[in-house]
Image (cartoon, rainbow, N blue to C red; front, top):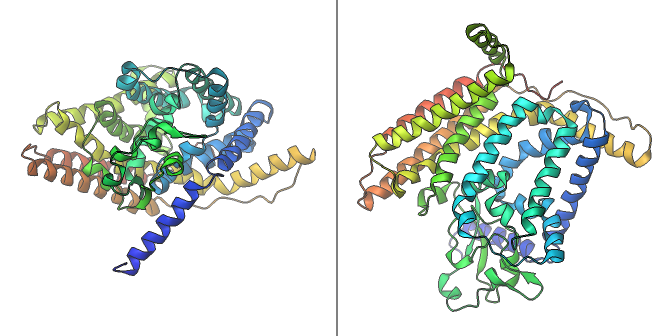
Length: 452
């Protein structure tokens, strides 16, 4: 039955994962756990100490959860979206309100632009309003996202907010394309003539919350591994299987302009976030203040932020048009090739927080919960985090750059084979330049923003 032991191992792991998805306890148990943590974050954010390094809300949200989130996208696709604490609020709202509307063409067409712009805005807002350094702002931000999701749930069925408006959904959808797992139809012939229970739902189990039909599913972007389709498919045609990382990107056939541009913009965002953590940043800002005569830090950061995003996005558009790709589907496909570099740069950036500040963050979280339960301060042994050398992160960045180069090469070859004749060398050169810039960046001394 199995040609190699590797085939048997893949089958066994796929079967084990499928059993988890089919379990009636999944994802409800995990949703309750994340909802409990969400409640603690809001409580400590509003009523705990204002010192971010000693507050449960900030250390759990920004030192533990946020750094681990991109890694979860690589390992498990959008599985986080299935256990997100916002989901119970949406489900409860829809049970009471019973909305009848499905997302219309306006939301379907421009939703990705709204998600991308909101993500860019929140990134800018964090630096100008110091959201990650404020427990209260952290709690209010999470409550605002919950409020937005509930408001959308009053109007639209299922999880329209997650699919079309959530700023984290924009990030997770792109990064999930690199995941090592995928949920697909075992055989489309088996799906032929079925009642589409995976989309519509069956009995007490609802249909796909993100409006997907497994038979035509060819991307992880809008699959959150919630297990609804596994539970409702009477033919057992749905399977969760392992795959080579990022394979989906070079095989992807339906690129979107907003997504393609956001994938490139993510590279610029991570670059700004990372250079902001280096010791060089302070010298740069002092020089900029002297050179411009502007003493407003937030204004200068905003200008720098916009210039970097403009340069990266503008260079991508120039490279795309100069390469002959034009404005059509062929040109858009290359935007997705930048995802592996953005992801590994994001992981490298986040690891400075996770490894450098993570151990103390865990101790702070346990101390806060212990004090809440016992009513008295709980002593937890203190200790420093791991000393993280930027040299350790260089292979990660290089791996991401090579991955993006390979994906761009495969996209170019596929287009040549289909007689589209799109030159892709300009994208390869641009990706090399970006990779070198990140290598230099991660060699600079770091000063993580949370370590205070």
